[in-house]
Length: 100
Image (cartoon, rainbow, N blue to C red; front, side, top):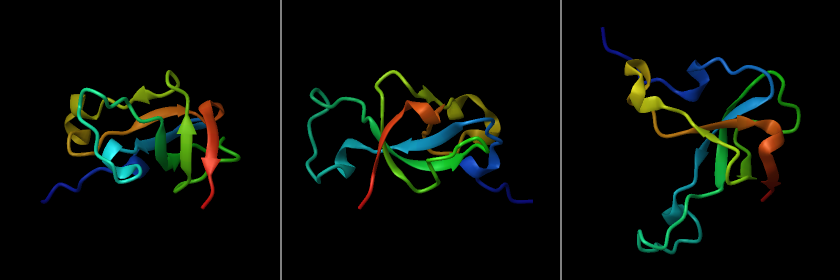
């Protein structure tokens, strides 16, 4: 039986927490900066939300605080090893939503 790749929707999120995929530096504005000058992106796209999230929904483009997110340790768990890098945070840690 072939093993299916896990996604954030396979994880049960409690309360007003959400999972977001950080934007990579080369996705923002189309300018690629050298590794020395790049900083961790504070922008992301919401991949999954808990039942307590009221204002944020899946697919929202968000900006969050520097110390707010917790890196989801996907590489530490066999079932999640193939899942891309995501962060988890409380809905209240989202500073703004970008409407396009």
